[in-house]
Length: 153
Image (cartoon, rainbow, N blue to C red; front, top):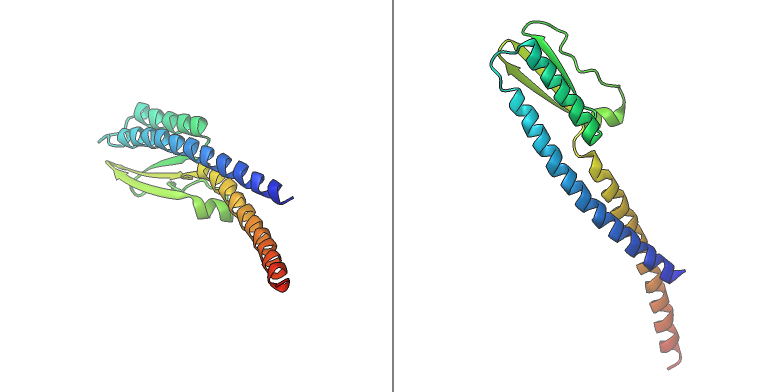
């Protein structure tokens, strides 16, 4: 039982480190895609083709990186620039909202950053719990062994 805990600890540690490397790689690619998207917003006047291109970029990012990004355009003074979110605690806690005022438009961009770091965090947390359990078992074993050795003298 004790040795199995240690092997499970090693397994989840390696799995956590591998998934952390994968998440870091995805984060880098996602950052580049977002930078390209932000560069598209630096247009002084938006045409319908520009807006369609920006919306297509958002859809591409959502499909490629499994995110839930949304964007809303409105002219100054209009009130329809609301973010279409599902109202729940997790969505509101982990959603970042950016507001850009460019030319005659207010652009509201909403996204969930870095969700793919969830897997490494879970794996490394499980690994840490297993290590603590294994160390506590080892500590009890050492305590019993030292008690036995001291009581025989």
